[in-house]
Image (tube, rainbow over all chains, first blue to last red; front, side, top):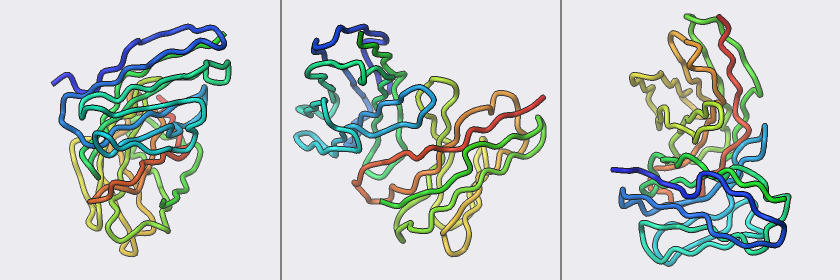
Length: 111
Length: 111
């Protein structure tokens, strides 16, 4: 199993650009989620999903969209990047109620 | 969502036991207590979880009070590699609810 994979590892955007952060898992996990982590801070939940076709907002959803068309993939879209979205983004997956498995992260800088 | 309280930082001498406390007084009856750690900028890593009974695995031991309002993670022989931020998170079981990380405890191991 590859576990949870995230692409890209690093990304630099200009203010106003849009992009999609990819997350995939091969463990047939129902639950997937996105977190952001600012320097020196804890993880904050952006969006999560409990299954294909079902998504919900976390603590800090503004400026981000998600969709879950398959069990394996959970992309995160930045609609119009802002410097405040400079952060490290982590994707995680689990069975419902189970142990969370995290990806290696995407380091995003918005200029 | 159950709230947790952890000390922001702790330190421990190498080779000694590190005892990390967590207060989760609002935990629901069917919620587990999960512990994760994050080393430097990597994705969080699962350590251990429990419901009522004390648990032990190759990484750590988990002591849960009888009223389930608090728990203690024990790293029996701390090494420099155990320097990390440790998170205590109620959740799991059959729950499909979102997983919220708090601020965690930054554990420093001194040589």
